[in-house]
Image (tube, helix red, strand yellow):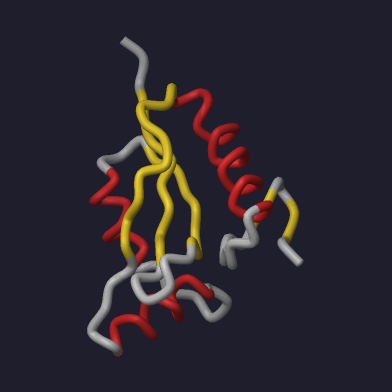
Length: 102
């Protein structure tokens, strides 16, 4: 049996805008918790989490696609990033298609 994962979005509970799209083969709730500890000076997702936390809010976790074969996860993540950007979502992903996002 092949490994599977999912593609997920982190959504602002105030506006319902998608701010981050990711993929994981872990249980998605574990990956969600890892975002809380991923601090770096340039990590805009972390600062967004902190902004929400100060307001007593948490980002909403939305599953975009599952199950996804593990070998296809990166491709499907890129598909969903392109979809979200095309819809005008304010993504904070650091990398989009292997290059820094403008």
